[in-house]
Length: 104
Image (tube, rainbow, N blue to C red; front, side, top):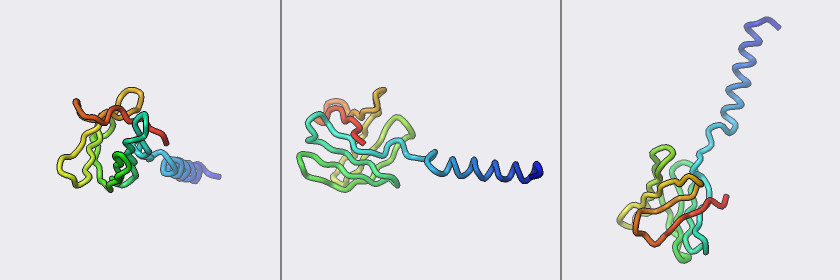
């Protein structure tokens, strides 16, 4: 195999490897508080759901990249969560949600 073909094959392999998981959204998953009375499910494509005491609402979200996630469940105010060093999410100061730990 000549060198130009080898380069093309290597580039294709690198592209395939990057597209098979390198782009996974780090926010995606299910988060809940200690007693699971609050459950936040983040899905790809800016979709998610938020359940409080068993009442579930469909939501959308945006992120600033790696620090905050802003949840909009069409209930008035948006809720901004901050990612902690341990990967948990903390709601705004003074809220009753507490820390949400990633379950999956």
